[in-house]
Image (cartoon, rainbow, N blue to C red; front, side, top):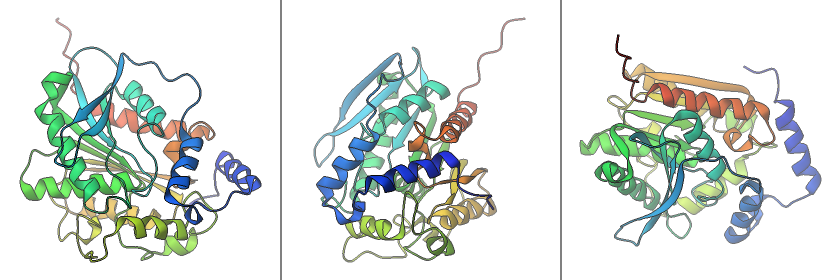
Length: 317
């Protein structure tokens, strides 16, 4: 399926190896979070937008922080963004640059949620936070200048797992559905069930042992492996879900479950655009500073989102 890893991505791996850092999964959670912040929080000037602000969303478990990225004035389609990081690391700041670029290139108002992380808050805390934030965005769309008729969910990695689970939950509760969903290299199945774990489980941005570490933090002791809100491929049916963009990477232990999810969506009547990055590894959306093709893939995501927004009014004849 691929001729090899992107040279820019390989160079990034070589730099990390030369640094001689211990594997992330050997660190404490606090130390792992600090390392990821050091790697991903942008130090340079940010992409300028019309407005960026943090708002507090009321929650039974305390206020949730949500960062709103407005690329232009006026009423805009709105997308809830859920960051990756194995439900354990990363935050609003690590994904600030990515959200700014998506907002700027798509024209959508992007709302990035600081959901509760594991291991302090295990499943289903992050899913419940995402549900609350989605309903808040719909209820308050007019207040924040959002167009509730055009609403999307965007997630990458573990955030894409939450997006997939949330669409199932919204469907099953008969709630207003998103009009679009974006799943970038999603977690959709149980640990180590697919050949890609063996083919690409060592030596890339995400490896098998790190994935096990993340799941050990996220999963409650008595979890049900057939819970579709935990592993969406366990769902009896995926019919009735929103149109989707699914992005997968060849050099990723999660490759096969992403491919399987895209295939099942399409087979069950969901409109799917599938982008397979044959020369990339897990997490490519976060590598745009070092990997040129990763930036192109972000722009491809943003263009797909733009096509799902409201059509411009026709000029008078």
